[in-house]
Image 1 (cartoon, rainbow, N blue to C red):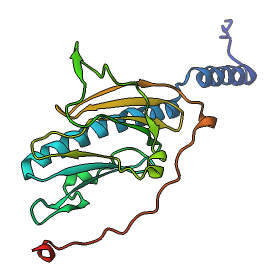
Image 2: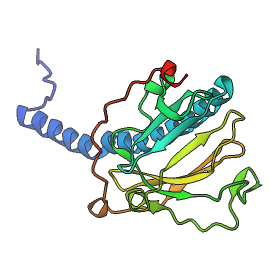
Image 3: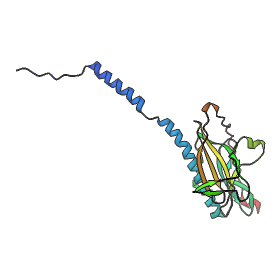
Length: 221
């Protein structure tokens, strides 16, 4: 009786197949690192919107002013009045649990800011979009505000209103988002902003951490 022999693969053929699969996977596998960096920019924009909503709500709830400070190194922090009656000029770090989350992620910073006019800003809402018909989009780099000795912040009054502001969020890849805040309604519009080559980016040097000064309301009575 003749035995039928099934054809098989040699070791060399198996190695060639494995190598070919490896090459195909290398080309087809998505770049998750780039995706993660892209999400950091979008996540930072979402956190800024949340921070604005929370500061606005707390200002109305506590009947005291809240601030979102934009520092000249592009970082952001939330502050609140120590006491609206006894020490309205003193602002301290917000202490609520929501304020402990970093407003923007490590690879993202506020690159530039445009201060909007005081008082009711020239804003129109057309098809659910904010429109500043009399304002050119001309944000200035945050480090330039140090030269003008101008403070940068969004300040929320107890009635929920705040100043209008426009700023650019930038990430280390060079991608940017333009965010515009309508201070009358607390509404934020976010849109894509011009791309900058990574080698042309000029991120400000980080500021040294300041030691938080401790205050006692009784000292102002």
